[in-house]
Amino acid sequence: MKRGLVWVALGAVALLSSCAGLAGVKERTAEETHPPLGRFVEVDGTRVHVWVEGSGPDVVLIHGAGGNLRDFTFDLAKRLTPRYRVIAFDRPGLGYTERLPGYGGVGSTEGESPREQAALLQKAAAQIGVRRPVVVGHSFGGAVALAWGLNAPQDTAALVLLAGVSNPWPGELGTFYNVTGTALGGAAAVPLITALASEERIERSIEGTFAPQRAPKGYSEYLGPGLTLRRETLRANGQQVLGLRPHIVAMSQQYRDRLRMPVEIVHGDADKTVPLHVHSIPLSKQLRRGTLTVLEGVGHMPHHVRPQATVAAIDRAAARAGLR
Image (tube, rainbow, N blue to C red):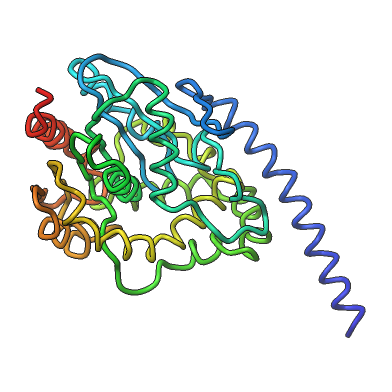
């Protein structure tokens, strides 16, 4: 019996070792095929990846869970650069932005809070001369955009939330985050996911995010799912999402008093990832100057599915803030 357990343990070690090697190869390939698009700004020793183009009032773009700034540069940013200076960031631990000190590592269980992430990006933005921006956040990035406004209400011209996380939700997050965001899952399961995730599984996951719409042609190839599947990125994303709810509870109690700038909220009524009735409908009632636009039949990716409506919301936010 004991000898059998020893062989099982040795087999598990061999499997993990083999997967770690394959994961390393996949990570290097992902970084070679999808290198940084922008430049780096160092904030208190943390490297932040930022993409800047265009001219006009500043618009900051903050991506969602599991993504990177390529989600915005695929299409939306190009629609904005003729009239705005567009600044797109990778959030900590995702894309090419480093994690904040004290976070990360195989045994870590804590993720950077929205307010910590916003503070890092605000310091990076200050280094490149950003002043009173319109801050746009998608999904998890919506929580970071709200945190940006809470951190610096006087220096934030307006907020635009795209299917943004804003309020506490009922129930659990699901197996994926409960695995990738924990110490044991981060050590044992994450290398297996990195090494063994198939292209078919990746495509199904992307299509599920866009449902009931389809992902635009070329989106997956441009985004670079391999960047998301890097071990440290999976851990960072899992830890941040798994630990998000208590931060949202605390933040939501401050929206009415501190967020007095114009806020445009865009949300599809077919969004099953961040449900409209849980997040944006309550948020529109919590804000003094919040305006909600509901997109009929649209899922979780309004900036791809209805880009004109997204641009219109950003234009309204800028106009309401006196920037246009």
